[in-house]
Image (cartoon, rainbow, N blue to C red; front, side, top):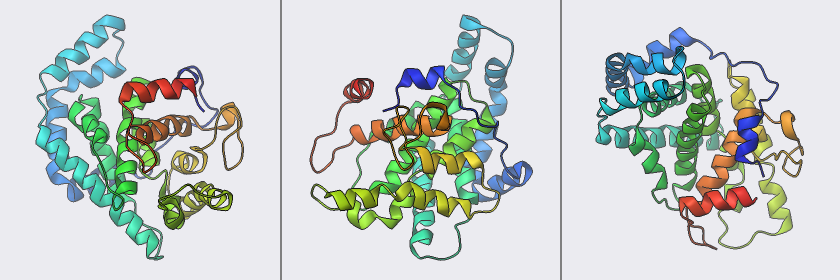
Length: 287
């Protein structure tokens, strides 16, 4: 299991991400999600000193105080957080439904746009959006909710690590799509019993399925593919599908690996109760 301390200490030897079609993405975001993006841009302009605090030369306590003051005056609309969360669920459902229908590779335009909005909200200190990740889910919407939750929490971790906007967005897209390969094995994964060895081996193929799907999408960022393929790898080599170690694993995949387990622990399963956040973190550290 990846340790949080390892994430903070290690940097993988992978190139700095460059988001595809930046200008096109910004224009399409305004067309697809005007209600969200206009409000986000307004608040971002009002609180431009947040960006200055994050990227400028201020150090230590002064930077933290500047960010804190800006966030305090933002007064984010909590109902808007709920609408964004619901829209994210709708988008991932559309993507997974298209994959299951075996049509052409899904268009990720909506994914990039909603992840951009989520990242903006988290930068502005939207704690309500993070709090929504602790809500419950049913068998019918488990995968959708899990993917959205892992996306939100991964972006929050990326922000804590000092990621810029480009890296937050790429990490978020990777987290949003990290388990799409599960669509190939959901019949097995949803069995209300302990899986046998053969079934477990089939489940372990989902990172390959997911990364193969994403590789067929034009102009997709490499970091997104790495997340889908490597988020079940572990720094001691005990993970799958390739048994990679340490810096062989992309940094984004290490983050999503931790959040994937954490998010699962704080929600109930048929064979166990949900753990509280503090319990889940203790269990992660013990791993």
